[in-house]
Length: 104
Image 1 (tube, rainbow, N blue to C red):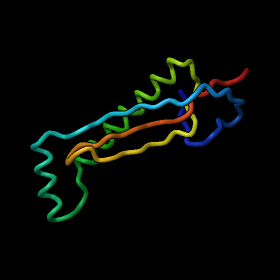
Image 2 (image 1 turned 180 degrees about the horizontal axis):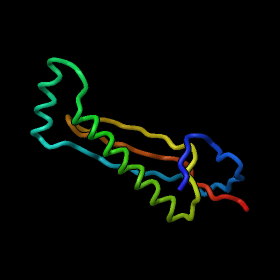
Image 3 (image 1 turned 120 degrees about the horizontal axis):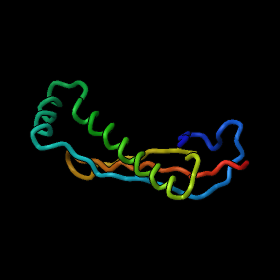
Image 4 (image 1 turned 30 degrees about the vertical axis):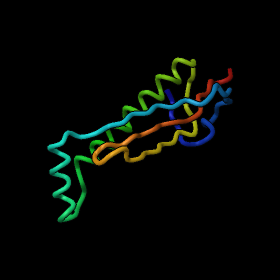
């Protein structure tokens, strides 16, 4: 599956299939959440939250790709990500784009 953040795939003519998306609400366990709260006192990267967001993006992307595959897509164009805090230490990540098929 080709994923691009442009509205085209170089050298291909596209047939639009429709919007696809994947979402996940992801959190870290309470122990890591407490440790990260202490880290905010001294500053620096909050590694557990960076890891959490990377895991959430990967899962959202996987779900978006599964939806596109179910539609028979060859690629997803205009891929975008959005995130929002659901509660302290938990975030929703949404991956979305347009599923397309290559014209022969």
